[in-house]
Image (tube, rainbow over the protein chains, first blue to last red):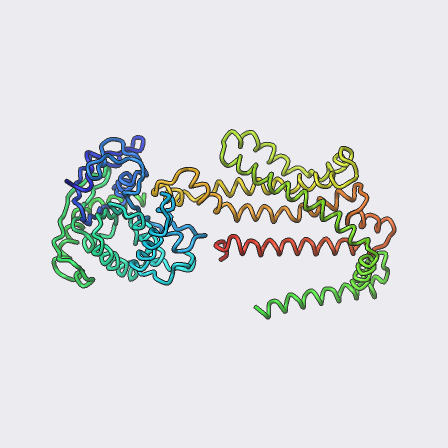
Length: 257
Length: 249
């Protein structure tokens, strides 16, 4: 059975049709990316899965169960880090267990482990303002992992980082993912990022958002950054780009108007 | 940093020297301008005689009681306005109206009601301090970041958890700013209310000295008030550094 299924998921904001009949099945432990031009509804789709936004029709099934409201089975990694400025790295990371009323000694041990995993050992007592953008995103990731979710939902988590930091964070994410093999749904507008990270890339078209194609990425794992220069990699990027090129041009023109 | 401190000190010393020079040599009449040395002399004499301590104690009590009541009440009203639309609709016109009104002009009325003892002054202080605290508390609670609310929601936080873990701490800098604003207003309230009628207090000292054309003692009262204002405000700045360190830079 699929870990996560989206059945005929549709979303409207008033008269604006954002998503139409999205059908997706994601197997356990898979890393799936959603790419598409701006305005294709990819973030809305992620927010519906997270329970932050209701669907207009259709269903989100996690392990066959219908999910609505946000819950500890889904961990959300936000585009902007959304850290609480008055909390230390450690206290930010533990907020999920704390909200669930489970911030005991076991949770604290787990947070320490997670902070080591994301490369923040020694920074537990730092405040967000003392950290770089990349480090703040590491806290953001650790915070989502802290509730040990069945599935990790990531909304363009590296888009605010500079190009070099972004590449480093991509490899770091791969390393962390290889250790736990959580099911991941990753939204991005960076095609190379999607191809590099994913087992499968879902390409969304715009207005209304719908899945144009699902492309399996058959690159061997673990992947190092050099894979980005391999011809197969470039071919994948090209293929995705061709699928969305017209849509991207249309959305750019629309945004300019 | 050191150099900057030094520049500030130098400015104060030079200012006092210029003041001394103007009052001794140019004006040369203590009736119109008292020199700093005369003022400090007056403070020393009044302190020695025990009158100064008594005046300060009365004014301090009026300020402290009024300020404490206004702070608690102001924060509570701010909560009500931020958490209930009906509460806001009911309170908003009164808060906004009374904040803009120079309620200090009502001091004679309060004295008529409550007598010339400390309670009429306490009431004036409450009226002056309450509204900036209420308005800031409400604004602080309302400006809670929508992104951060969403973050907590994604972890399944209840509205109560969102309030205590997010709204309250993020409103704290605003609340402190409102309380800080209240210091100067409260001090003015104490003195002006005392000028209208009182048995003791720094305002009383000032009005007595004015009646007797004793300018050094009048200035003594003003200087004590200035120092009180500076010390309390500096104390608040320190408190802000301790309580809301994330708002720096």
